[in-house]
Length: 122
Image 1 (spheres, rainbow, N blue to C red):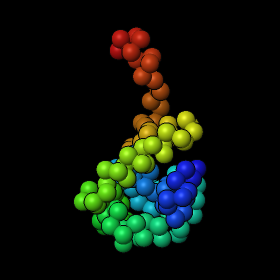
Image 2: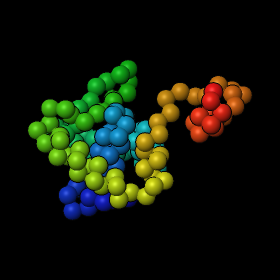
Image 3: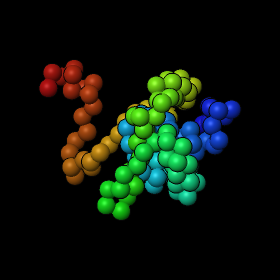
Image 4: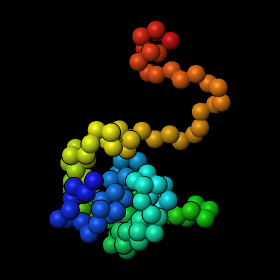
C-alpha cells in the first residue's frame, strides 16, 4: 500500500521506512519478503536511503542490517509522518507489521493465547 505517493519516490521506499520504523531494524531480504516483492528493488531503495543519510547500516557477518538514522536532522517529523501513514494501512497489514517473531516455537508446544492465559490466571 503506497500512502505517501506524492512525497516518496517509490512504494518500496515507503515499505522500507515503515518496516524499519516499526521493527527497529531489518535487512533487505527480510523487508522484501515481508511485502512479497523482489529483493533487488528493495536493495536499491535501501542504498538510496542510506546515501541520503535517512538510514544507516552495519554488516553483521555477510548480512547488511539497516535501521533509521537517529542523527538524521528530520527524524522526528519523518517518524511522525510514517506513523500517520500507518494509520491509513489495512488492519491486517498493521498487525503483521507489529508482530515480530524472533525465534521458532518449540516442536509440540501447545499454543496458548494471551487472552486464555489471563482468563485462567496462569
